[in-house]
Length: 243
Figure (tube, rainbow, N blue to C red):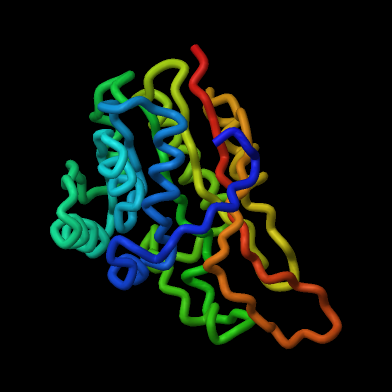
């Protein structure tokens, strides 16, 4: 995966009807492609914000080991059910705040970290531009509290700073992050997060891959005098541990 734009089409497989209950689930085959790029067979992949386990399923598909951490047990249960239905190896999961687990984890023990971050306050703000957005089922990360963008960034950089200590030297961290509209303003969340991680951790930013998500539907927002594009891409920030 040396090109900066990923245009491969990923079918809705591996019990997609179950996994889509989590609004931020990612195609396991896309996760597998990323894992194969940055690891060798038998190595260990960590997802500190695992959701319904797309990263862990991807690891199983390409002969790697996986570890997942998720604060919402509902998503872990779906991951385990998918593994049973698909006859996939079920990896170790922790039902906890990832910061608690990462603080206790062994240093320099992980070969690759692949995760999809919570989508700021998209799942908590009631007023949105469309009925589709209003029904978003993205997982809640911090209870019912509506975070400011800075609070969201601070929480994530705390997690990724802890990820730094468990990742082996010269190994990589990959983060799915979509940009978004909030109110009348476009927020380049990928840049906000990349800069926050650069400023508050020792990770070195190496690349920004673009995943063109062909599964996304086009939405009509009904605003005749304002330009608002339908978001059909996500960013995959690539960082490296350099010591």
